[in-house]
Image (tube, rainbow, N blue to C red; front, side, top):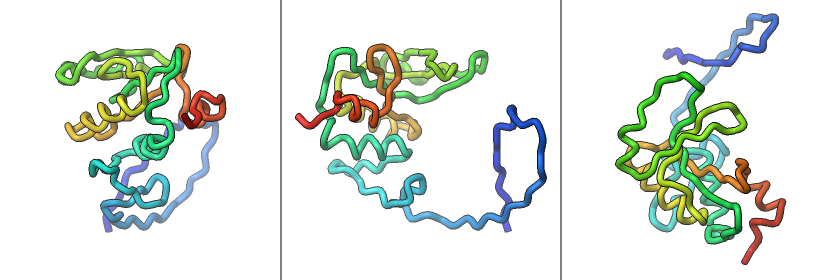
Length: 162
């Protein structure tokens, strides 16, 4: 039997209780999306998403991929780190402009390729990075200078069928 390591943030814990947990780990089929419990269908170009946000982007793409709006910008994020943590972005410059933005979560988000006007443009760039060793890359949406989620754009009426 193999053992696995579980990492948890315990910074806010004031007391503890010991607990044993038995886990049964099984291999997932290559086209399975363990994060949503469903099966991931490759896009028309054969791209298979490698993280939850890429799956979500593909779901929104057909309806909202080409929508643009004033103040709406899409970025491709490759990493987020805490202040003071060392990280090297020199290899990322081969893929275009590299920006480091501090966001409301207090982390420094490393964005590559500059801002894109539409989700489709950003996702095409995201796929290129994912195929080149940056499989965790995903789209970050900024609206009027603040990070926003796909669902919030839809609720606000910014994402609406054209």
